Length: 410
Image 1: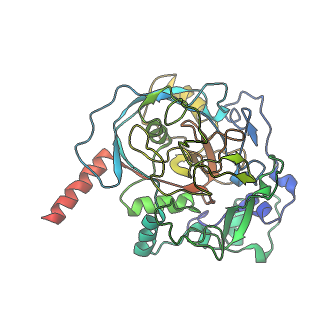
Image 2: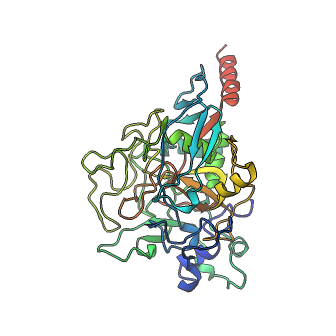
């Protein structure tokens, strides 16, 4: 098994189980450096917005952000049809966000051109993931106990080994406190929970019975990539994801446009009330919501804002856009694939991939990560209560698959 394909390792794992002192989880403050490798790492509070995972072990930190509206230069739509997928016509758009509310890891905004592709209309559901597991025998990261060697490979130099009893299959579960708590320490609402995984999202005794149409959670990047390969698909690039999330809009703050977030008529499954202790659930949901519970965006995609964070193919780098513009000299970037390696100052010893879309934990008073340009990096071997994914297919791949199905029917 490849290194890192286990459960929540390294310093973050250690602090989550109380193995290392709190000082080890310190996150950097806002940076004055203009180095592209530091330009976007501002710790638990970035660009004036707090993170729903602020002050967690670095492995579990997240970032926030806003978005934009109506694309141009679209190519013709594909004539094929794939069940459960939506054709996204290629085109040029402004990726990122330079508004005052944007975080530095979204900047600078720049022009990007993507080819047309197919995207799952919804996040991968429990039922779909179950079919994959039953067909392939896949065991998820959260279902496997990490080895000491794997943990130490991602720990900071000088880190002492954890106790053997800590090496159990587990995952981080959102556990809201019963009172208001300081918002600078997410340990107040996240619990390291043995036995938590995609089948038992709140740990031993919980289940997904009756939730076949909810998005699967507690999946690592490795789990998502394995599913995508099994399904003949792939994970979206970060550019594809943002382009699709905008739904054809050019200057919209959200995937649905500029209309403010409404508690009376919710546009997405996000937090209502006082985070993290009082969820009014005016959208009807305590945690995840079934697929298609809210209106789709302009492309017919559901839950591109809120519900669960979604894995992307790209490695995470807080200054990816600055480095990209430096390399391309400000020209339109065509089908960017992200940096060649990850760099996450909040978790420097663990390779991180991009998450997009925000989750049911996002609230405007604390984080607005349900905007199209919002991005964060998460260690590839990490799954949580609010991380899922959806897949895409390139147009050429879809045509090949369509031809194969035609042959099978004959």
